[in-house]
Image (cartoon, rainbow, N blue to C red):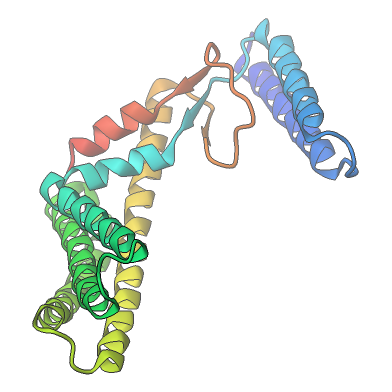
Amino acid sequence: MSRSVLYIAGLALLLAVASLVLQFALQPEGGSDDGRIAALESQVLALQSSQATGGGMRVAYLNAEDAFQVFVDATDEERERVREKVAEIEQLQSEYAASTISRDDYQQQVNELQAEFLDAQLTLNINTLERMIASDEFAAWRGDLADWQETAQLLSNEVKNLVSMARMGVVDLTEYQSRYTTAQSAFSQFDQGLTAVATAKIVEVAKDIAKARGYDMVLRVKNVLIYRNDATLDNITDLVMTEINGIL
């Protein structure tokens, strides 16, 4: 079969699937969601089957959340510190709920733990950022990463001041909470910026793998796949994770 015929067949399948999804989305309410999903699944499978004899499209999927975990796993020590602080905060909350500590003691300890938790999160992200900057594979984003590095250093100084303040005992709770909230907001922006770069790299790696292995399409698992047939739909998540792990 010629390449043009395969292309037309693949395009026909895409249009047919899109039509089915549109019908599913526009179907009036009142029917069973399970029944509607099952009907859509069966129709998609029927389309796949009808294309099988014509050398249908090669499709793969990616679990982006699992792939992103590589960036976190690259800094084991810092990741463990984050987990420890989460556990300590949960334990403190349980003790307070059980009335085994006073309100004043709880406030003192929760201020300290929350500041330490923010410091642990920030340290984890800074270590990931430094790995990205050191890798030539992130050269396209080096300018953005350098800007974030400068911001992160200033934020780190403020967070360490909050940790010291909390450990010595907060004198002005209103001022402390205001500074903590500001630092937390700044960290969220930093985290979002770093996540955007990591996500862009995941997409780039996934595209390279797809091209090298001859896939026509790569789908993202979350909020996209209703059903997948593992016999005909390949999972390239591990391939993406291995590739990224090698460049960090």
